[in-house]
Amino acid sequence: MKKVDIVVPCYNEQEVLQAFYNETARVLLTLPDYSFRFLFVDDGSRDNTIVIMKQLAKEHDNVKYLSFSRNFGKEAAMYAGLTYSDGDYVILMDADLQHPPAMIPDMLAGIEEGYDCCAARRVSREGESKIRSWFSQLFYRLSNRMTDVKMPQNAVDYRVMTRAMVDSILSLAEVERFSKGIFAWVGFETKWLPYENVERTMGTTKWNFWKLVKYALSGITSFSITPLRMVSGMGFLIFVFACLYILVTLIQTFLFGIDVPGYVTTLCAVLFLGGIIELSVGILGEYVAHIYMEAKGRPIFILRQTNLEIKKEKSNGNASDSVC
Ligand code: UDP
Ligand code: MG
Image 1 (cartoon, rainbow, N blue to C red):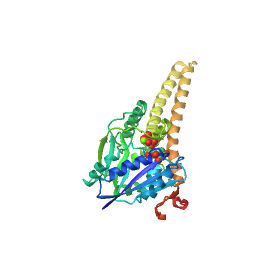
Image 2: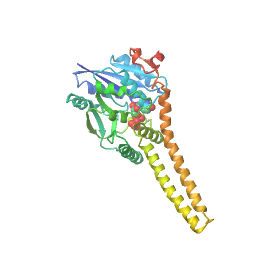
Image 3: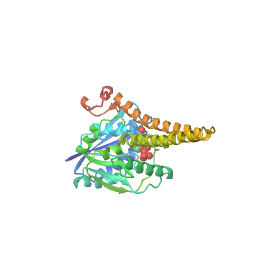
Image 4: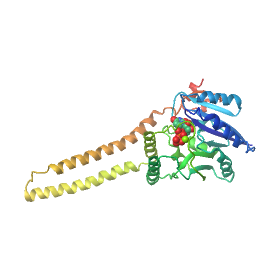
């Protein structure tokens, strides 16, 4: 019998967790050929999420939980879940029922067809604000143009993966993780299943506009050096233009003498170059920040408590030292 781990990152999901379990468990009953295990990851929730997880674990042997010492973000929660998974297949899904559990049988069927991964892709973004959809489209267009990894638009973090793919994902040890890019980067054959967007009915989204912008920027700079090349290209163009302009000015000066008024030209040049320099330093800064964060090599998450038996070598950095 194939073992399947269901990794569920949860942050302040007390309203929905029980409903998520009930709904998912109901679907799993239709799949007797697999042995399922839930791996709930409590990402430092400030509500009663961990209490509900413990209750579920008490009631059902196949419920495991990992709880962080603070909120480390969804990326860290997914990474922790994958790190402690040991099933033949791993399902990654949100706790808020926006990833319909009813798709699990079709997803597993995709894996049995021979795919390494079967992932969900939204065909509509109904219920989502227009501005968020527009920015999301812009992000995919930009990142697909700038990076070698092609991220399919509207792909969500709802997927089933084989052990081989999960191990490859874990072998990318970067601290600042951008899973959408990592999933695409490791390759493997992915089958895409379309689904209609489901609105969140319980609890609230944990993302706001600026968090999403930061995430998108970090995504592009994690996977592409095109912005750096653009800075070099821009510098080169400005250099060529400046040389030509100097030449023209010198010739003019020799032929006609010094023309004193030049206020507008000087001001435009100073402001334009100042702007370009600031922009370039900003872009460089994004990359330096990545290097800084990676160089520190801090653990991606720190566990506070779990009902899993943890082998020390599996932990990330000092993670398991903090398990109580
Ligand atoms: N999540 C998390 N840590 C965070 C933010 C979110 O583990 O810091 C989880 C959250 O509990 C949910 C999933 O990530 O299971 C997706 O979050 P959310 O529904 O807020 O995102 P959205 O669906 O609005 O993109
Ligand atoms: Mg959601």
